[in-house]
Length: 111
Image: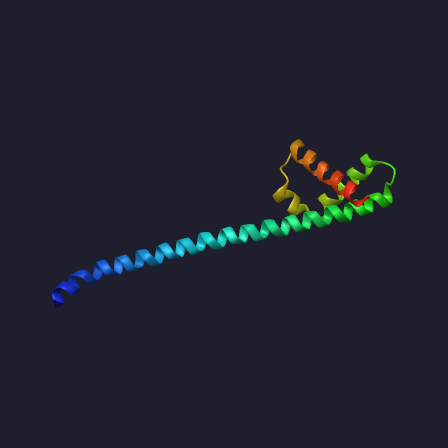
């Protein structure tokens, strides 16, 4: 019986290490995804607050011109939350269009 346990011991150790490695991998992936979701949530909140603040300021500085107010909000958001813009808004003309629509939407909500 003792020889049987000695022969079985390396297999049991290898299986235990494989299970521990698998659990570690699952935990690592879980926490990476959790961190990414928290970062995205933080960026969305920052972008939302910057759009609101920019819209309020734009209406004070440019009360008669929606186009100038929208441009002001886009500039304000780009300067105040560059990381959020980089992480959430695609680069290029499509991203500028999206940011412009978001800015206009906040201006309309604020009025």
